[in-house]
Length: 352
Image (cartoon, rainbow, N blue to C red):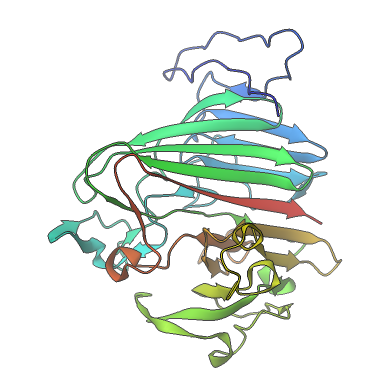
């Protein structure tokens, strides 16, 4: 694969960046809208083989993704403040930190509470950050952001995200490197709302090879414990079934990577590279698949139940996660980045 062609730096709002012409023989650059800067930040559009991905700098957000004109995620306009976490990148933790409080190395930390109604710190610290698009080609782009130490999270992380369109759709790869002092707790996830086709979540079928789910309290969604999917009606999606009016806002695990759980595989390269997929299918047989690797052993599924009619159950949130909710307290599958260490995770969204 050729190296990406540099494009102009994203300008300060109200300024215009110079045009960067590709070198002779180089692949064409992606479309980079820079002036004026839209509400959702600088924009990049990638296209390849019927796929079109529209990216926004605020939150390193996947603003839209289509295949032959068909939505694969719930989109929003570039000149609109992003609705909630739709399409955003989540780091340095996904999901919730209960009460925004946790302890590391004997030190108590208090995060700002941005899920006010439940009293939690939700979805990390970079979903409203203004990322910088560094490089772009017609089908590949990268963005970066440095998370500086702050109250509640006193570590410095250099984050990079790469988006690439291929024959199998859009692959997103996020890497975090600890470029400061001390060992940093870390987790990540995306937050797309998948669209199978016509209709709403109620009209689609979900196939998810997960053996367990995380039970949470009804009022604040605080983790209680992991249980077999068969313990809760409608939560066993291993054979695939219609979602109907089922409410889901839960994390699933016990994922069957590569068709098995990997037990006794001896850590083979094939086992490490195995992937799992969640598939959402519309009544006409078309749909969308999201796949990911073992670095993401959890997935949050949410049926997007909202009081606003225009947002209610219009897409199925599928969020592959490095760790479960409240991992900063439980420590379960929590990534610990020593100074200089990096962690990489990737996922792919494919039409069928």
